[in-house]
Length: 211
Length: 211
DNA sequence: TTTGTATACATTGCATGCAATGGACGTTTA
DNA sequence: TAAACGTCCATTGCATGCAATGTATACAAA
Image 1 (cartoon, each protein chain N blue to C red):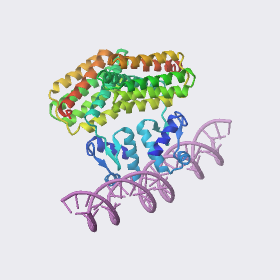
Image 2 (spheres, rainbow over the protein chains, first blue to last red; image 1 turned 60 degrees about the horizontal axis):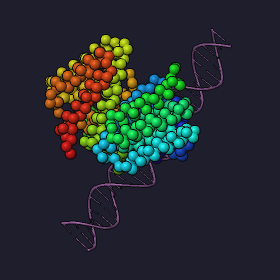
Image 3 (tube, rainbow over the protein chains, first blue to last red; image 1 turned 45 degrees about the vertical axis):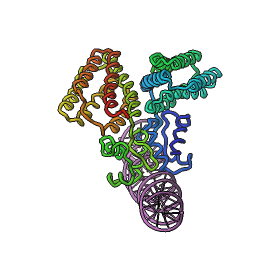
Image 4 (cartoon, each protein chain N blue to C red; image 1 turned 135 degrees about the horizontal axis):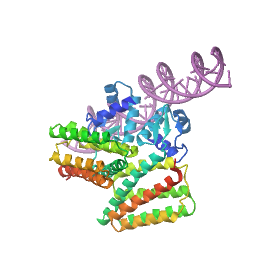
């Protein structure tokens, strides 16, 4: 569905921020289609967890401090799983050197963008990196859920998007994760992935979670 | 949305089995509404991961052996998380004795139904039990994802639904999980939950997963 | 008998119209 | 001036119509 992708993009890319009410007619004239496809796109996004039914129409999902912590806990579990599976596949010889090279490449891009102060690009490459780990895990069920969680977190943390205090730490964690996967060590990969996600979370909660 | 709940029920309760193509008009006359609300319900179910877009219309999601294993891995992670969180809340005094009593009650009902050979009731109570653990964890993000996974697994394993070879083992695992939560031991609760889910999975894969 | 093609039909995607509902705003009264 | 009430309008939920698309079937030809 084309309208679905467009509306999803409007939300994930920030045109409609978290908590924003969305009226059907507004989307209609913006996209140049009638209400029917717009409504169907909104229903599907509702299933995706990106918008919620409000008293009138829908609003973009908005996670408060606790809901954000909850989402990060889910994310940490699942990223531990995907990292573990990716490492296991590496151990079993199911990954190619090109796979690992690309993983390093994504980590490089994320690090470069962050160091250069391009936060938006940094976040984007970061997500591609984590997404590629999930791809290497070859677990579509996990990937689908992670996409859900990533989107929800992205939308709800955009307002408080700032540069990491010590970008080198983020990059170090990426490298450790890569090392564990490359070494075919599932336990270590899972641990690094979990810790990395949780440390990302604690940065957020330290800044805005005292409410 | 009322139509959404009805269609969802038709799928989860087995009227429309896994892999079944669903045409809009069929649902229209069955539910006595026009195509518009039916279409919106299907789009939302698509977002829920319960139906997939086919070349023509939608079909009920059907997980093959590998997809089923993937889903069980995700489920194991998340149930470990909810069990761990529930145990932590117990340790921190956030759960009431009534909470634990109800947990035991659900386990009792599940065990009784299973021993009496009522598979459908057994599965239902089983799910209520696991759902209540997630409730005690107080993590709506995890609960939402688990509902998704449970529904998908329920739909795709209905055809091969048989009595557990040794129902006493299932019940023992439930009791161990309850004990760990009641003791406020997050580590042990997580381990028991994970092992319980994985042992459930292995029963399935041993029977039908050799393909 | 098999294969290719054309036609008809089933089904979907989208637009529009109408009724219902809920909220906003203005008016009135204490 | 503040609060309560009523009216109006924005917005949504549902039904229906029409065009497009893909599939199945029947028929013809090799």
